Image: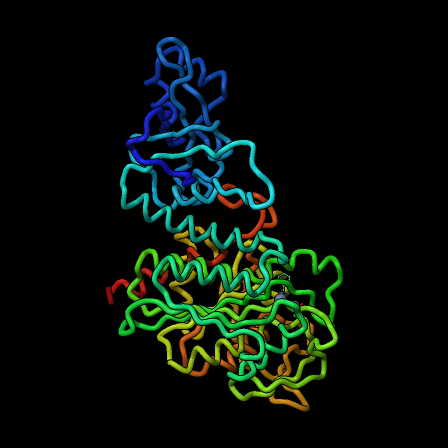
Length: 455
Ligand code: BES
Ligand code: ZN
Ligand code: ZN
């Protein structure tokens, strides 16, 4: 059920947002009984505070919430679980960004554990605003659900089924290439990484929209579980690796949003989906793989698998010369060392796009920070037996060298790469611990502006 309600709903609780700077004025306008409650509750209209106010008979009638003037995920993001169950309505609609925070804050992952209460709900009066907010929230929560799902329930075939379902709902076509068919078509890196798993690797290819519109291609790393392969991860590093398809989940959520809001683009979504597993036919350190693009890659480390599955998908993508290619990937631990778990590292071939994406991230309260595609570090990708190596021997700049590896498969296409955590390590308002669609809202905000002119 949506966290939002239509204005026709009955039995709603009046809600009032009180700006902290207007507190004294507001309090002086209340009845003596209400003023007593405000005082006893120590309500000063600070962000995060709320107070019930009585009707003439002294019963709780309406709720006042404090506000610091900001409209971001924190504004209403903790209300759905902080307020008692019920439907709340303010006189005027809240800001769109604050409403998105409410919707995202109402999320719970219920696949394996039911919930003993429902979130509080909020009326949005303006139907167009309600529809926009719900589309964004649903897209983010689709990504969250997929990331939170255990790998056993979301192996490549299940991820493909998810894309098929989303595509069918929104009128897209989906083509899936699975198992040995990957070799026939030349996607040898995707096959190599995924071939040791029982659930075979696949490449998911969704298309939607007017073929004459600008081509936008989104690529997502779909490593459904990353054991590290023969370069096995230690237990502590493997523990969270069900989220290694986070890039694919964010890409699918973004694709759903683009289709729902009918952005004037020709959309293509490419997801190489694999499990990086171990068995007798696992790919090995020292193997050399000829990629779809023809470049040979020496495997130094089977745990640097994300760039391998992405490089074939990206080489395929640029064949049709898209206007813009964006990829999302939980690619490196180094990106987390650089910008932490709560900011997505961004790489871009065009400065203006990077700057506008940064601003879109600020506007959407979905922070991204640019790291450089520093060309001299390409030396670190040198191999003595192949064109490049998948994992440099240097311990430094790992997010940058991973991005430079991908850049070899991008040609002249304008490209943006997000190396993201896709997971909230702690709960904050609007951001519950668990899978998170990091970068999705920043990119959608940017794309709306970029393609608005061609609408
Ligand atoms: N999926 C991991 C990266 C990762 C780790 C993302 C932890 C988020 C949190 C990726 O496949 C990986 O293992 N990368 C290696 C690359 C190295 C072997 C060059 C890494 O970052 O250590
Ligand atoms: Zn890995
Ligand atoms: Zn990985």
